[in-house]
Length: 396
Ligand SMILES: Nc1ncnc2c1ncn2[C@@H]1O[C@H](COP(=O)(O)OP(=O)(O)OP(=O)(O)O)[C@@H](O)[C@H]1O
Ligand SMILES: [Mg+2]
Image (cartoon, rainbow, N blue to C red):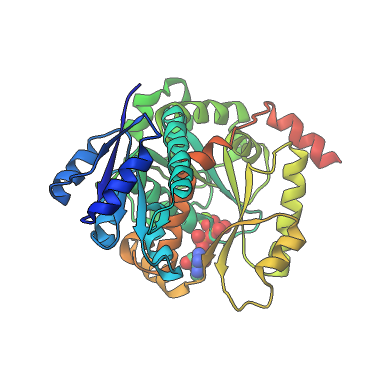
């Protein structure tokens, strides 16, 4: 059995002794209690496939945790603090802390936390090779799909350090090239014109690597193309090769509900149904949920994502959940100025203004999506022949 290196960062000898004693019940852990300095620790952790880090917040600054988390997504960080108040918890979670333990330590709490962390690490290993395809959908335009898709994709690439694809599936009025100021040599139209040659190498060489990241972008076409000439079978072939080539695929769709869209939704592991909080948008959302249920998608696959959320809105989250009969998965705050500044500069908001409330929300969403415990629950129940199923539903 491969041991999981478990580090305890603290100058409190008593804490280290007790924790080492408690951890003895987990034979798979190899506990390291004496850390010479934080930079050696940082290098060690980043070279490991899986590790656990207990960090005593009296000793290590939260920025250290944040740095380790950013560069070593397979390290699970557990913070220990004497004072686990709300603001501490919020900051800790934002800097990548997975679990929090109150000091003095209680044996049963340590056991529970370590149990959960070990489950998430083993799920991560099992799931490592499996691609997750995430689609942003709304049957209303201008709701924020492109903003969310592009920022989420960038955050996923930065957090996981795995290859992420961002696909603009709009054949007529795509925006990703504008949002990211890209001038790609190839676009999605080129891929569909060369589908018979398509394999992983061809795909990677046709996509635009975004700056110095693991994000690859397949851009929208610069001219109008009739997507009806592309069959669901062709789209399916494209997704199969995408899924072989990337760890995460993020798809920005248009608002039409045609066979191309249904094939995309079928192939997706997570469908984020994006809405804003107003009655017409929510009614549309309701209708989409009905369609999704007719298409056979289960409750976990489709998740509600509220965009432009405002705490003091007349319609509350509770109202939304009652109306849609479904929990809201995520809320992205309203921040018009931050978005406009980013769009006008052709830079993603997550890069231009990483400290803003929206950028933090995109980042935390990416953390959730890449969380292996959450992801293992999402088994794609793909049912083929989208065209036939769509026509059955539309006739109903
Ligand atoms: N959280 C937010 N807060 C404030 N403004 C936002 C937010 N998200 C998006 N916007 C703004 O809403 C507008 C539409 O966003 P976006 O282009 O991402 O939507 P879309 O659903 O992709 O639209 P389309 O249907 O045209 O493709 C943009 O001006 C964007 O800046
Ligand atoms: Mg768009």
